Image (tube, rainbow, N blue to C red; front, side, top):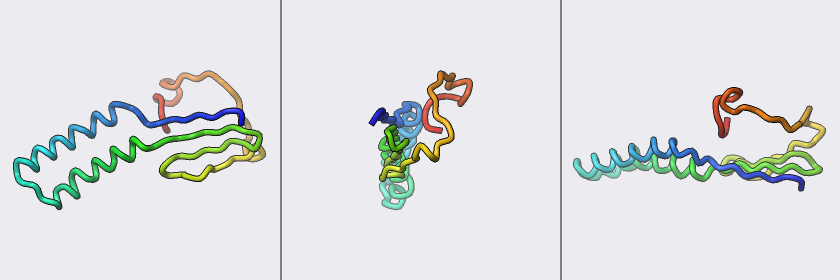
Length: 106
């Protein structure tokens, strides 16, 4: 293996945006009384979204066989792209904000 890289989704602003929603819902439920329907359709989906976003991990492998990726929890087995399938590959410098609108998964 020539190269291995791991990327995780750790943008703080995503979590900062979802955490207050859970807090507001919890305060409202505490004030109005706890109902399992409210929790299962209000708090639970937001908490599951937080867990899903936190668990996402992209792994990239470059070897003699080609380029392989896994994207946990969506692509668990390695998906291999052989060098015959790849039209071109090269190293270059780029400007993430100007070319792609920022960093991260696109």
